[in-house]
Length: 170
Image (cartoon, rainbow, N blue to C red):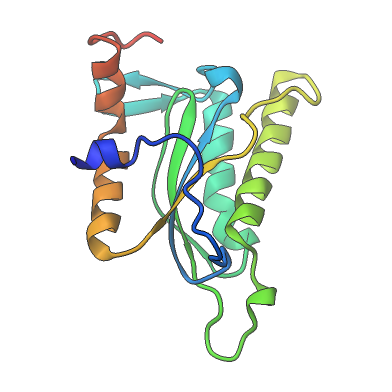
């Protein structure tokens, strides 16, 4: 199975009994409500050009390490109707309890809530959905898989254009 096919599965791949506060890398996808092309447009098959709303989403994403203890951002991309990111949770170091750290769900919920409020303020509306309910996630289990996810994220603009028959328009 190629790397692209491995990371296109719909829905959460939650590991039964897994503590999503645990140290490690997590591949996360957040989709816009009704898959609206709200966040960017793809130029030259390689570069997303952010809309003002996409810039808000990017800025909120980049703030996560400052807002949540133990969170680090790895590879990420803001696409027209979704965001891919690899989030590292660096929790439970030494004698510290996992209770002092946010779970993956708390971090993603915070991102979605804060960026949606900012986007809606910029749109001049209140309470309008920006993102779909929930999010897609995958625990990254080893270095090989981490490399594959990074490549998948980097190649996302090219695949976006290929899926649309070479058209850069939505």
